[in-house]
Amino acid sequence: MREREHLKDHHREASIFTGRVIVTLFIVLVMLGVLLTRYYSLQVIHYQNYATESDKNRILVQTIIPNRGLIYDTNGELLADNRPSFTLFLIPERVNDVSSTLSLLKTIISINDQTLQEFYDLLNDERPPYQAIPLRHRLTEEEIARLAVNKYRLSGVSVDAQLVRSYPKPYLFAHTVGYVGKINKKEKARFSEEERKRYKYMLTIGKIGLEKYYESQLFGEMGYQNVEKNALGRVLRTLERVPPVSGKDLRLYMDSRLQKVAWEAMGNRRGAVVAIDVKTGGVLAMLSTPTFNTNLFVTGISHKDYSALTNSLDLPLFDRTIQGRYPPASTVKPALGIAGLASRSITPTYRIFDPGYYKLENDDRLYRDWNPRGHGWVNVHKAIIESSDTFFYDMAYRTGVDQLYHYGSQFGLGKYTHIDIPNELSGLWPSREWKRSARQLPWFPGDTLNIGIGQGDALATPLQLAVMVSTIANRGVRHKPRLVKEIGGEPAQSEVVSAMENVSDKYWDVVHNAMYGVVHASNGTGRRIGRGINYKMAGKTGTAQVVGIKQGEKYDSEALSERHRDHALFIGFAPFDAPQIAIAVIVENGEAGSSAAAPVARKLFDAYISDEYPEQVQSELASRRKP
Image (cartoon, rainbow, N blue to C red; front, side):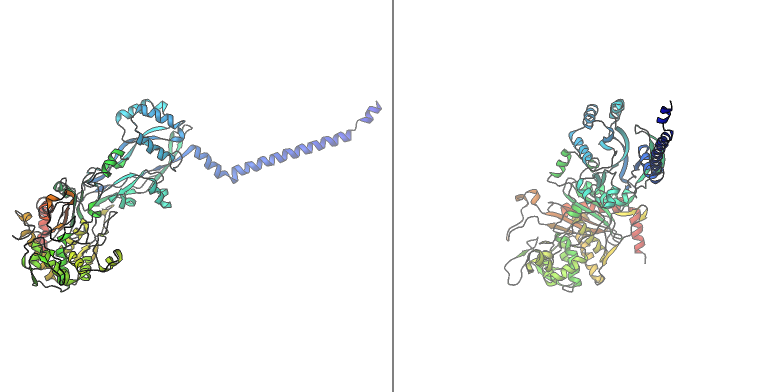
C-alpha cells in the first residue's frame, strides 16, 4: 500500500494538468484573437467593401435614358418625334440557354435571320452585365399577347415600352433632318472616353443631317435610379432616383409647306432646290431628289431595302444640295459681272459685238456662244439678260483669273458654307495656284475664258449657288447659311461672313436690273416664268454641259442618253424691290434652265410671296419703302 502511494506523483500530475490548461488556454486565446481580428477586418476595415458587395446582390443601379430633343419646322410642325413602341428584350445572364430561348421565341413570334444576327452582334459586343439586349422592335398587340401567355417559359425575356424616333415627313426632310440608327463598331471605335460612358447603355445615335450635327444637344443627359430587387431579380422598390435631362428641342428656319412645294415641283426628276432667307441666311427649303424614307433606318433597315437604295442609279442617299458638285454655268454671270465692274476691267457702257463666238489673238480656236447667230452689240446689262457667252469670254479675259478668283471667292464660290449639317463639300473655284498644285500645269488664257461662263474646272454645290445669289441680293453681304433658328428655346444668331465694301451701288444696280430683265424683259432667257406674275423678281438661267462637245459640232439632245444631257440651272431672288428670299435650282439632265429649273423656282416664289405669306411680305415691303 505504501509502495503504491510511493508510485503516484501528485505534484507531477498537477504540473502536467496545469501545462495542458495553459496550452489549451493559449490556443483558445489565439483562436479568439484570430476570430476577433477577422471580425474587426470584416466590420471595421473592410466594412464598406462588403456592404457594397451585399448591396449589389440586393440593389440594382438602372440607367434612365433621356428623351431625345424634338425637331420642329419654323411654324412648329413636328419633323422628328419620339413615339412609344413595344420592344422585346432579352437578358442573357438570366437565360439558361440563349439558343434554346431564341428557338422558342421563333415559334411564338416572327424573328428573321437578320434580326438574329443583329442580336448576336450585340451579344458578342462589349457591354455591361445584365444589360437587356433588344431582339424585336415594334411588336404588335397580338405578338405581345402571345409572349404574355408564354411568359412562364421565357425566363430573362421581357416586353417593355420605349420611345423610338419617328419622322412624320420622312421623304421631305430625309437629307436635312436626317435620321438616327444603330451604333456600329466603327462609331464605337471612334468614341472618346467620355462618349463611351455616355453611350454605354445606348443603341442608337444620329447618323446624318441635323440628327448627327446636333447630337450632343438632342441627346440630353442620362439619369439613374437605385432599386431594391429580390432573389429572382424582380424590382421591389425604388430607393433613389436622379431623373434624366431631356435633349434640347430644335426649331428650324425651314418651312414644311415650302419644302412640299419644292418636292412636288421637282416630281420624279433628279436635282436639288435651296431657298435662303436673304436677311438672315436661314434656310427656308432644302431638297435633294430623289429622296428616301428615313423611318426605315431607325430600328435597323433590312438588307433588301438597303440594297435597293444603294444600288439605285438615281442615288437617293446622296445629298445633292451639299455634296452634288455641278458646273455653275451661266448662273455665275451676275457675280462675274460685278467682278468685271468692280475691277474696272469693264464699265456699264462697255460693249462688244457678239457674232456667236470669241477668238483669242494668235489662236485658231473658236469659243462658241450658245446662240450661233450671236447677240449683236452687247454690254454687261444685255449680256446678262440674253446670257451672251461671247461678252463674258471677253470680260473674263480682260479681268484676268486673279481678279475672277478674288471676287468669286467673296461670293462663296469654292468655299465651305459651314452650314449646320455634316458632310458638306466645298466645290471648286479655280485659281493659278490650284492648277499648279492639282494638275502640275500652268494657267492658260483658255482656262480663264471657260471660267467666265461657269464651265471648265469650276464646280459649285446648289447650296453655294443659293448663297451666291443671296449675296447678290444683299449687295455683297454674305451670311452663313443656317438650318436651326432656335436651340432649346434660345435663338441661334445669324452670322455675316463677309461684306464687299468696295463695290459701288451703281454696279449693283446694273446687275440687279439685268437680272430683273432676265425674267421680265421680252428678250430675257427666263421670260417664260415672268408671264402672269404679280410681283417683281430677278433671276438668271444656266445650262451646264455634262459631256464635252468637239470643236465645230453641235449639241444634239436626241443623240445622247438621258443621263448625258445638259443640266438645267436657275438662281433668283424676290421681291425685286426688297429681296427676302433667294433660290437656287438644279435639275440634272434637264437641258434648259429656262424650261426645267426656272418653273420650279417660280412655284417656290409664288408660295412664299403670293400664297403662303402675303401679309408678312407685304408688311415688310411697306416698311422698307418708308423713307
